[in-house]
Length: 377
Length: 76
Length: 137
Image (cartoon, rainbow over all chains, first blue to last red; front, side, top):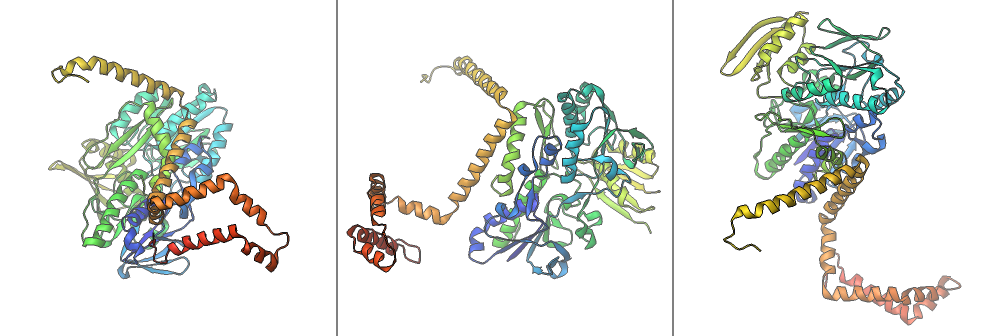
């Protein structure tokens, strides 16, 4: 059996390692062939970019060689897919290589896009890209005071980021001793300050304590770069001296170019994680069209389901597990405390008061991530 | 050319039905319709409120067996 | 050891006091821990976990460990360790370094009884490992 993994990010790496571990003997015996195709030979710990943007981590701390993370049984090629021919069970890469498969896992992720909001690229800072995170730290370090506005595009990965960014901005300027010279303004696209009700309920008093001004129902439409004003679809506007953006995202272009999903979001069954209409294709992580959080933890828990099912299908012909919608996210608050949100399709998240222990756990997880990537944790 | 797309946001807490609607609206063409399915009672108010603020059209909003069926149309 | 008849509730105030003490100790430790300390500790733990995982899943290494467990092999290893510690092996190596190399030097080395012993031991070890991977011992 040939199993092909397209995408070497968080999800792709975890699930490929998961399958390689489960079927290690079969791979050695030549009964199973596992191949991974990726656009890059590097593996980035994306949540680390937020720390880079605030000067708490360096770029070198959040990247490793992809090959060093993979189980020995995985054949890894830095040669991204350009064409998907799902009807023939094959893909064609940029290098012109055709890989046929018996089972395919698509984990190509999603990326920040700026073309939807004119002026946003020139006018804003963001922790969402590598160049952005490095640049943002310089801007923050050099900022002497004024209006700082946080704007949020839809959809985006890491749903908690807008809140965390705001907390971190408050703390950063406090530590620099210029918080009294900064007006922090937070905006959010829907009726409350976060899409998870319990988080919004917890965060409002925190914002008030931190003197963060907040406006809801703000969907950015365009940015007047010269006058430093961001306009919303709802007809309101915000002036800024520094604009921090959570940009809107789309699935990778290759997905849309191959008509696998509108906007790059692949239609996926929410329980089996199979691509709609293709029983031998699984979709994992950010690129699915599922109306769930785009986070690393989502990809991790989905990997466990897909990993077990692929092994089970090989051994017995049947899948054995369903994804229950599990997501687990840390939420960094201020003063070295954190809390978490854990939920699934049935149980809503309960937010407990932030503690130092949770912050330590998050700090630890930043290191243990590499064990997760290897399929160990 | 318009089409009604069904977005099933039942039993999801994050990002939630209204954000799913906003995502859809960005990609949709003028004239496209969307039926949003939601088990979140809050969206019965939030969705109409947002539609009104931005200026799209609310076609229908009804609860059938614990599920809200909200049909909206992109008009601009 | 408490007697079986002692009521459960009597032990609790002591247990609770100990729990509070433990919590206070943890809290004190947390106060001391900076992000850097936590990061270093967690990194060591994480890498340690990865290393253990690699080692324990390496079947070759696990087989070698099993072989090394055998008494006869342990005896040989201890002899080797003694020899290394006593310096006699290093003396032998240093003494035998020929002033001139080449074929003559090689012949001189080959005639030495200690060198011959070492070659014989090496040959026995190599013979014990057959290509199919099972030890003769």
